[in-house]
Image (cartoon, rainbow, N blue to C red; front, side, top):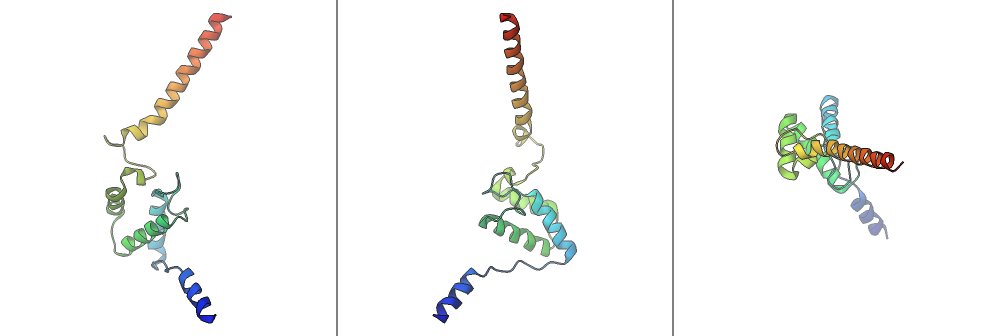
Length: 124
């Protein structure tokens, strides 16, 4: 019975995160706020408890501990997951649709609203 309880306790125990000095931990957390959890919708890996987010946080901490700069770390994640991994993707030819879609949807909705209002005036 004791062996079963011990085995259960050991299986539940998580691997401790890489211990970083306070300045590096703050930098790692700032980076984690910019990286989107690929499992959750619109949530950063810092806020998510998904297993994938835990792995991504571990990766970020390891890279910060190794001294990798922020841009190289972001690029490594983009190479692995695509631009969708960034909560604020850069504006370039590949991500222009991500930036333009909200504006196009608002313009389309406004055009529909104006058209509907014009039709109501003509009927009255």
